[in-house]
Length: 173
Image (cartoon, rainbow, N blue to C red; front, side, top):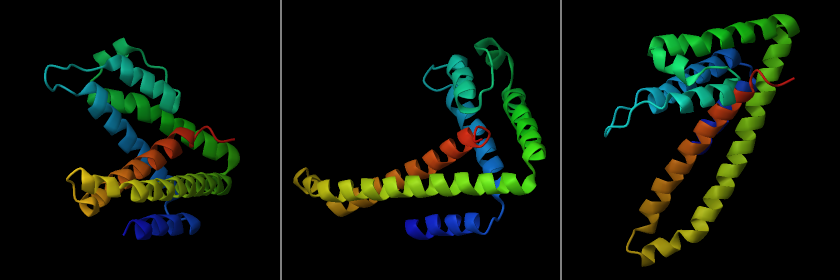
């Protein structure tokens, strides 16, 4: 199942289908995840961590944002504050190098990260398989533990692909 998902995504990239749309959707998703993580967490008395959000915006996309600006803006304002300059930079970059060159760049970046993370995932699954037998001694069914941890590793791999592609999309020369 996981293999089919990765190879179908890879095939879409090879065919050049919806490359810009995919990367842009991932950028929007990453902003929403960051907002959910740092700006909206009113759980157990923990308030927003706008400094962490501002640091993330700078690290992920090179967007300068102070903690005060992050605290003053609502979710819609912050979303626009991050995505609007990204869209402008993406459009400018495409205008500068041309649409065809931009699609080649997107294809290269997506294939690079999908392949890299898939190989790392397979290696992690090998390590998991070798050590899973010890779970039986701990009173845990090794098959259930392997399946559960395998899904967690897969989800982490997908998240890492999205994060790295979106971070690098406007930094590749």
